[in-house]
Length: 211
Length: 197
Image 1: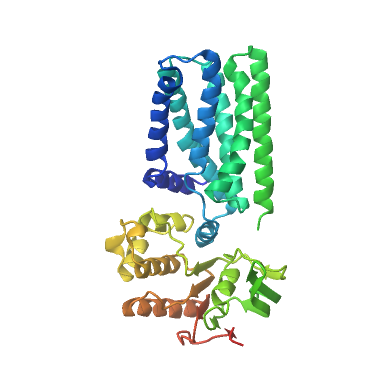
Image 2 (image 1 turned 180 degrees about the vertical axis):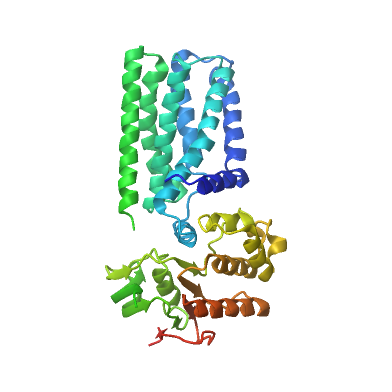
């Protein structure tokens, strides 16, 4: 299902695509550095503002990442047929490749944001990493689903439709980052796992039924 | 002999515009076919439909396909621009298990060996077509569809293409050519689909 050669190809393309890693990450880093000075005129942000802005940064970064390189349906079909590649293999391999590219970047940005605003999340590192991992998997699968199975493959439509979905995913993260007690955090993580499985089952159904 | 593509009422178009209307078609393995027609007659649309690359409207036509390996060399290049030629070859031939010596031999035959590390985005249209033909030669699919075979190719490129077509014919593989007029490159043509009619 996950093909090494597709993951390798997608990763190499990412490093050669100068509108992704080399543009989005530095832009976001600059925003993170400038943000506290612009919002509060100091390198310290109030805790109540910190969480909501960190979630906004997460949504903004994920959206920029999603719309960086829309797939061309005709080219994609030609490529898959030329190489006799199955759609489901492409979909899952691309999901893994995107996760490998996106997850370390988002963790790095969260660390930068915490560092530059001199504030921290009230949750353990493992909960933060797991919640961001679930967020990434869901966001990547939803984005790929829209690009592969629908005609909403231009940047504007992608932006309009995908952002509300990302907001939904981000809201689920909020209690985990706020530092609620461990039992409730576990329940939220399980809920997130359930949502991930539902989205996986949904995309899997479409992949298996597509010709 | 089994068919790899069959339809009794093939209707193709884009939106509500019909390009190919009520075509009865049955394409058999090991046979060669030709699609001819003037500009806008639907040659490329039909070829894309046969090669499963069509994303327009099929108006619920009854289409049956077999699971034979099929490749299309068409107006839109299939190669990935940001990868080098050798990376493209390795990507598209991932399950063919071709030896390096075989790849080198084919690249030398098509005079592409010196460009193997170059990115496809730096290639000319002729070089891209030559590379696609080289990949088709390496992959040797059951069915090869070529849209406007001679376009972009120089004399040497056309000669190499004709050699490939002859080799495929000898090995009993199917080839479908689409152009404005008959190319007379294949010894036996099972059917010429004339879209001018």
